[in-house]
Amino acid sequence: MVPRFIYESGALCWARMIAIPETAAPPTVVRRMASALFGQSGRSLRCPPTPRLDGKLAIVTGATGGIGLEIARGLAGRGAELILPCRNPAKGERVAQQLRTAADSHQPVHLAPIDLEDLDSVRAGAKAIADAAAGRPVDVLVENAGIWPQRYGQTRQGFEIAFGVNLLAHFVLRQELQRRGLLDTARVIVVTGDIYIIESECTSDHRWNGGLGGMRAYCRSKLGNIWIAAELTRRFPKLCVFVAHPGVVATNLGGNAGALGDRIKARFMISPELGAQTALVCATQEGLENGGYYHNTGGLMRLAPSDPARNTASAEALWDHCEALAAG
Image (cartoon, rainbow, N blue to C red):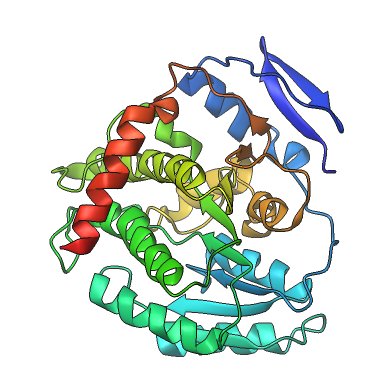
């Protein structure tokens, strides 16, 4: 079993092969920033190279760059066959070819055309995934794709764009795959961001403007991801569901940071390869807690009852709202 650890009274506590008691950690931005930024590289999880995934089928959204590409690379390197939803076919094919020709990868890599800003495209893409799966069940679904919008926008169906892409599109994709019987016993890894802690709501019609508005929209969608993961765990107990915080990663999420921003990233943030490790742990390792929140430096986190992620009423209401939006 991978070592698991939590925060307890401000100290880092380790546990191997034993149950970890519920411990309330204060849901403060200070705690999250301290645990995420400082010394990330040395304290982040590293996924072991085993077990192998030969014969397994995995889907990774957002795999044409950033941590999604590194998650896909890590799964392919362990022998998994991949299906990669992508909006840009040319970029997707370049990535697929890169993964196909990797020295340690001999499994097929399929592409499924999906634009997460359009639910009609998501539904059509689910059929393409089913065709690529050819009747086999999906073993791993990594819901990684996400945007940090720089200006207010809406999806084709009129939903606030961070909610629509980061949350609702994945909800509909998962729903379509379940309807086709492809996800009955899969591992579902929902990639979130610890920055969710600054928000307490997630709605499909949030109106905002300015740079801080885009950040808040992103945070709201990441909180919603955690709520949906909690409901997915509760409603579909045969699934293995994990929430993964990758760390503060040096990617293009949030737009071009400029020369100064790049220096800050290099100083404080971790590489996409290292940022992929938490999701890879959740995708491959045994003995993890179903429904658990896994943090790149904090391991298995026990969130305080006051943490917005623990709001079960909001989680249930959001799930019902997403179902209604998906049906509409």
